[in-house]
Length: 89
Image (cartoon, rainbow, N blue to C red; front, side, top):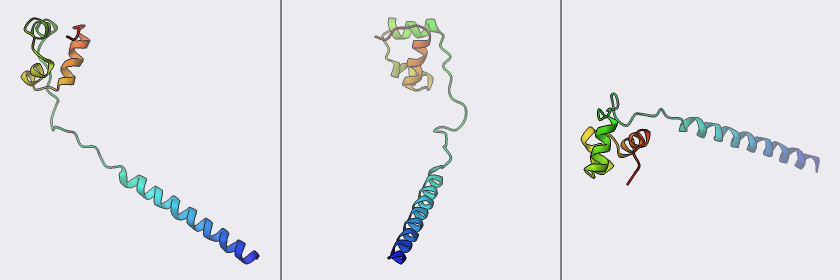
C-alpha cells in the first residue's frame, strides 16, 4: 500500500512540474515584439481649432472626411475636436 502512495505522489509531482513548465514555455513564447502599424512619425494635423470648427460645424464635414484630408485616423480627429471643445453633431 505504501508503494502505491509513494508512486502516486511521484506521479502527481511529475505531472505538476510538467504542467508548470508547459505553462511557462507558453507564456514566454507569446511575448513577441509589437511592431508599429506604420513606419515613421505619425502625421500631425496642421488645422487649428478655428479651422476644425469651421470644417466640422459650418461646412458639415464628417470626422472621417477631415481625417482623410490630413492623413489621420477618424478617432484622432475626434480626439482633437474633443480637446478643442467642439461638440459632436
